Image (cartoon, rainbow, N blue to C red):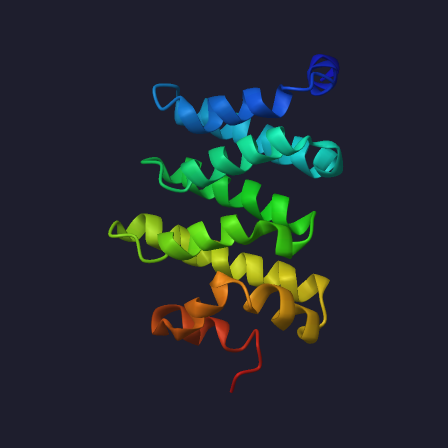
Length: 164
């Protein structure tokens, strides 16, 4: 545990975890997932201290992981993304939201499904953090709003927005 705390002081620690997690498919899924969960915790603890370069690399790695062949990696990627978005302004995450929106209609149903579930999680996060007015202005005016026209996503989400 002491060694992990020491590693967290290294400026590129999140990049290192991101690389193991998202870009080393030859490693065991459990190793990659542990790196992803350590990444999620490091992001949660240091989100405001991440340099723009590190933040961009973490985002890219997490988005890359959403299309991984391993379900454990796709799910952990969603957790990392939810942590990033939960700890900063939603409006700074429009690139992430746009990519997730694209992936909800991915031809591989397993990839599409994890992204639909991630969409629901992100909407819950936004709703918990914001009043509905702020939510509609910052989140629903993003590319994610067009997801509401997709019936496979609309019906599970309509209760979140009181669209009855």
